[in-house]
Image 1 (cartoon, rainbow, N blue to C red):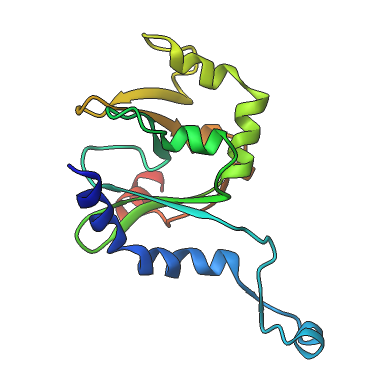
Image 2: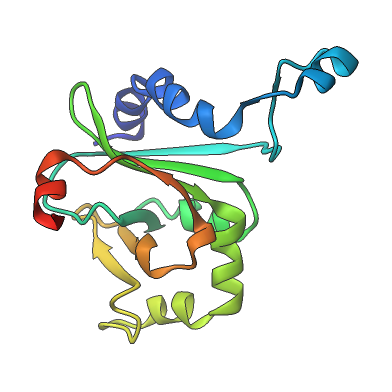
Length: 177
């Protein structure tokens, strides 16, 4: 699909994403702060840019996995390259159908970059043609259109990378009970 079609599809969910992400960014101010600074709501961890990545719900991907574009057929800069180059502060990642976003993850991109700096072998392993040594944490996925994605299992990363996630669906709750 073209970039315009993908972008238009994803944009229909932006208000819903804002509803989900908002409570993690805004908290009520103390009454002292309100009286002193006219601050009813505060952003305790000021962030500048929230990347939104929505994928069409297809396949049976683990809810703890998220994907980033590693290579585009056009050769344009990818999501992973921009993140590694220190762009973005948070990323909302989710799978959506016509009306619902589930599952979703809210990822701290500063913490993710710290993981890449502390464990450079994670990114270096992606340069290899075949399966990498970190296959339970990170791996490659062919997009089928000449591009390439990297998948990352957020549950295998340090806890500070994941800020929030969608609640498990009832079927998942029954499996873990």
